[in-house]
Amino acid sequence: MPDGPDAATVAGSTRHGAGRGLITVYAILAVGSTARAAYELLTKFSHAPLSYTLSAFAAVVYCVITVALIRDTPGWRRVALVGMVVELVGVLVIGTWSVFDKAAFTNPETGKVVSSVWYWYGRDYLFIPLVLPILGLRFLYRTRARPTDPV
Amino acid sequence: MLLLAAAAAPTWPAPTAGNAVIVSSLVLAVVTGFLAWRELSMPRWLVVLVGIVELALVVMTVQCVLAWVGGNVPEQPIVFLAYLVVCLAAAPGTLWWGQAEPGRWGLGVVAIAGLVLPVLVIRLQQVWTGAGRA
Image (cartoon, rainbow over all chains, first blue to last red; front, side, top):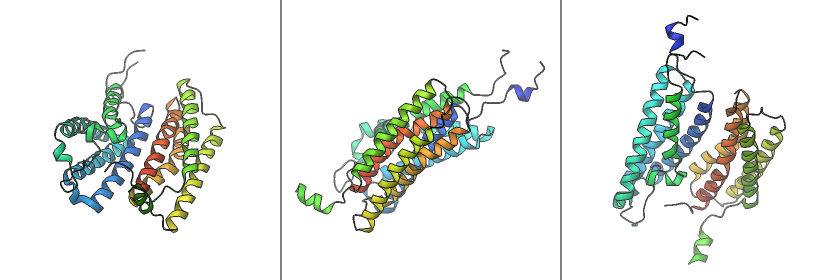
C-alpha cells in the first residue's frame, strides 16, 4: 500500500493513550507548584530567594509541558520534549545540589531548611518530579515519528 | 509550649469529611485501576462512586468555608484555594475527560485522580494549619 511520506512519519498523539495520563499528572503538578510559588514569592521571598526562585522556575516548566502536551502539534511536541529534558536535568542538578549544599537552602535568619519543588529530588511531591520526566520522555520516544512498520 | 502553639495556630475544620474523601477516593482509585488494568469499558455506575467522593468533598468545603468565615483562617490561603479547586475538579473532570478516550487510559486518568486526592487532602490540612515543612 503506497503510503505518502508524510503519513508514514507522523508522530503519535500526545493527547491520547498514556499521554492522557501524563497530562493529568502534569496539570496537577502545574497547579500545585504554581500556587506554592505564588504564595512563596508574594509573602516571604526574602527569606530564601534561591529556594523560592527555583520553585517558581519548576512551576513554569510544569505549566509549559502541560500546555504543550494538550496542544499536540509537531512544534508543541518539541516544546514538551525540551521541557521534559529541562525538568529531568533540573530535578537531578537541584536535587543533588540540595543534598550536598544545605547552606544554600537554609534561611539565614532562622537556620531552618527551606524546601523547594525539586529539593531532595522532589521529596515534597513523593519523588514524582524525578519519575515523571523519565516516563514522559519514554512516552515521547515510543510515539515518535517514524516509518510505519508493515503489519 | 505545645498548648500555646495550639491556641494560636489555625485548626483543621473538617477532619471527618476529609477522611471520608481520602477513603472514598482510594476506593475509586482501586476500582478504576482494576478496570483499567483489565481494559474494561467505563461502567455507568462509576458516576455514583464519583458522586460519593464529590459529596464528601462538598461537605469538607462547606465546613472549611464556615470555619474561614468564623475566623479560623488558613495559614496559606492562596495554596489552600488552588488545591481545593483541584480537589473539587479532579474526579468529575477526569471522569468527563476519560469518557472521550478509548482504551485503558480513559479509566486510567480517573484512577490517577483517585490516587492524587488523598495526597491533596493531606496537603490541604497542612497548608491550613501551617504544619507542612518550612
